[in-house]
Picture 1 (cartoon, one colour):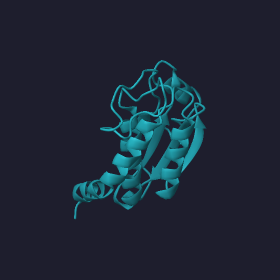
Picture 2: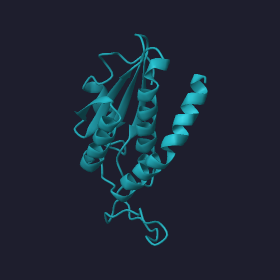
Picture 3: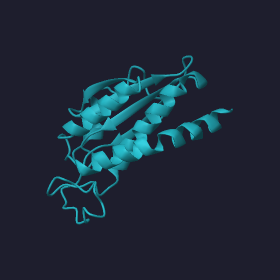
Picture 4: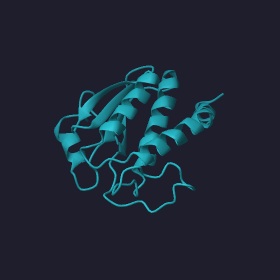
Length: 166
């Protein structure tokens, strides 16, 4: 089986888990620099997948790295984690994962971004012997006007190893 087939097979295998992660994040939105529950969920999920990571990037972010079979270029993948200060109007009977926090919701898809990047982490970790170089995974806080991305860069999270492409 080629790498492409392995990637798709693994994605299908974890699809339900990733859906549940997205729903958990959606139900518990947090504004920029307050993504403590999201940070903990990301950290637990990465640990369970055997992915080396560090918390505290730009306060509430997480940065992980997955090494391939031999040294090479480093590619970064990024997901934003914060929610908007907006009331979710969905009916919880039809959407049981509706925001449980009044005045906060994931209206920009950041819940999906985090879940997809966690899925990518799981897949890349499992298939790390099939690629060269490394992947740096950045779970960035405060994308919605908080400047979390600039802080990530200023704190040096794109160095050591230096990111060649994002």
